[in-house]
Image 1 (cartoon, rainbow, N blue to C red):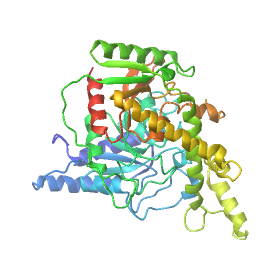
Image 2: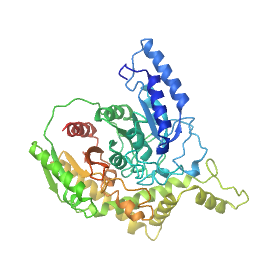
Image 3: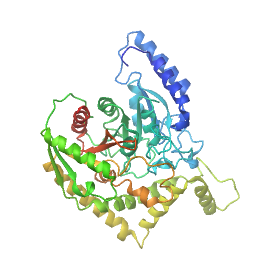
Length: 459
């Protein structure tokens, strides 16, 4: 807050915008009265002379996979209909402690499975730039809420590009931190060794501030590394060693205009004194298959808990034998894409195929990590397109799941290797849609990544 408007006025402004643009379907639940009450209390505290915390009055939306105590939590799925969270996610506790205002839960692909936000039990989210197009997924609601001015910042989750790709489609910034940088406690799991909570915003500084608040050690998440959260520091302009994968820019699935625009920008970086080199990356074609084998395997295990016995949706026929009850409940409660991925994951974990698929995918993951470590010995930053195309039209890929999966070709790399990645909204396409570039650094090097991003956004 800059002191020119009260917290209450800010919340009222966002609530008005949410109501006026409700056709975008970005929000599943809006906590208007609660947000206003918190805003009034923050205004009262500020007037009394109490020092303001780091997120004082910042209005933030949550993807509907992040737990907020005593509020609905459904993962945009019918199977969790009526469920209310019993506790706060660690990131929620940390934002509230810094005086943020949480205004609502945002729409997403069911259980974060999708690249277009067309798999939600609550209906599609629309891209505010062109309502005939998708916003990307799975965190489409989180991206559109920032894009359309329905909150200041938002949180999403990124398993294979679910923050960076919708940020790209919506023309905003999307950050996926290093795996282990931000606690996953209170995040509904899709694939536990891939999932990471991340941030949508309009400025690098805002994203850096929110990361500083939510990152850090957490006793409830054993995967968190004991490293201090990155604290934003202004850095003088410097020269970077930048690499990009030759196979990525030459890929036949990449939009030619995106390819030429990024190559032109790399020339501008060279002229500005940066080192930019194309490097061979022979593993590119193995990335998407390995990702979908591993994530669906983890999903088939994680989603086994949703059975209709303890909470959530259950089939209406109460006279069924137990096994049939499970089958009926899960068949009715899960959507088509979730069922597809559970079945695929169960298949690759089965006794006859475990070594052929799951073990091989793990080996590919290890090779990717080793290759990435070698790259960062010679370079500071890796640059890739965020997505092979701009946002496509609603319904365009729904009957072609393979084409939808291949849309993740440039983003799943960061999740397989655990490195941080950010999508920067640098460009506009002749079709009228935005697109950007994706930057990645070595693990736990977010501050450097953010400083690089800030410098690139200023040019």
